Amino acid sequence: MIWDCDHGKTDMCQYHEVNAWTALGKRRQVSNVINNCASNRDLTLTRTDTNTNTNTMSTQYSFEQSTSVEVSVGFEDKLVAGVKASSSQSETWTVGSTRTATETHTSTIPAGQRGAWWFAPYVHHSQGWLEVHYGKRKQGRYFWYYPGQGSTGVHVDTPVYLKGNGELKGQFYWATWKC
Image (tube, rainbow, N blue to C red; front, side, top):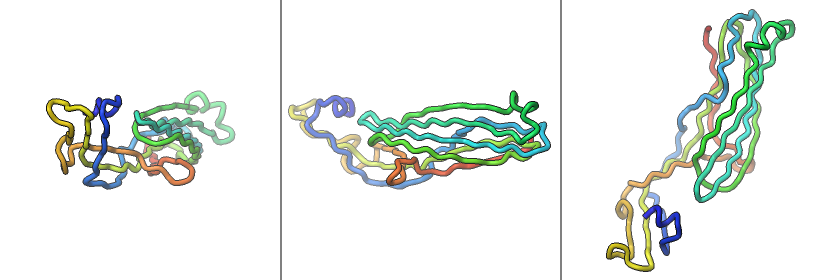
């Protein structure tokens, strides 16, 4: 039935929500671990996140980030090779239109420690069932209810966006720990 809905083989496909709630999703590391183990001075980490959300019927969410490290004056020649780092990652999950938002975070890594950023998006969780209508009988019936009328067997999880700028709503977490 879901394949039929996705490929225009039905007259109607309608999702009926029975339960819904919003909660923080899985926390993911969104920066490299930056080491300041051999230094006796603090480092400043500046991270810029660009969230581009392209939502179509096939559902897509993209997350990209870049990281740079600024080294305290006088230590650049000793630390640059081991400290400068960058990374990027991407994932796919959600529904809607294209939105882009950029955000910059600055944090400090104390001497003798490591640090990294994590992000947990808010996710809207929905449970319900799918009503499908066919123009011709399919296995003897015009109307199908998957997995059953009134049930909670279909699960839809979508990220929550801030109104106006399209930024993904969630919480960033900064953590440092000893080397």
